Length: 141
Image (cartoon, rainbow, N blue to C red; front, side, top):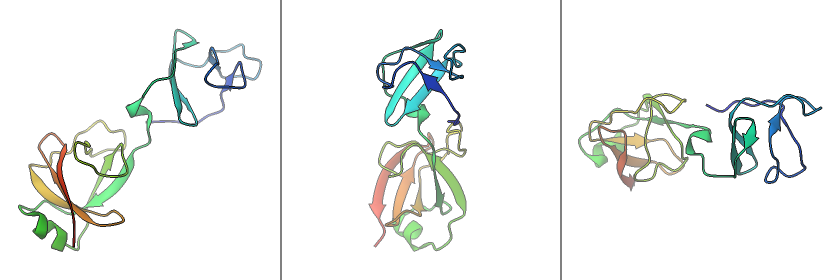
């Protein structure tokens, strides 16, 4: 999970920085790992920043409430009770997104191929397989 802190770089542009430091004097390099500024992710390895790249595990998890599982999507949509908190790395709950039981996005939610109503702006039923992958999404009407 991401943490925040005060870090310093050796240029005014994160894209051209060569390293991340923990002090203003730029004498103590920060720990190796991923760093983000704006929408740019860069990995520091052996004290040096590598070129920017995608870092899906760097994003903040999105918590959602879902109902218990149902055999049919219409049954899930009819349920008024959100009982389970789950997490994804996306705020959309799209097909192929993975659902987790924890904010660290490390424990996959076993959906048992059932339908769940998800509490989003426009409620939807989602089908989650045993691997935690959303395989179907339908708006609740």
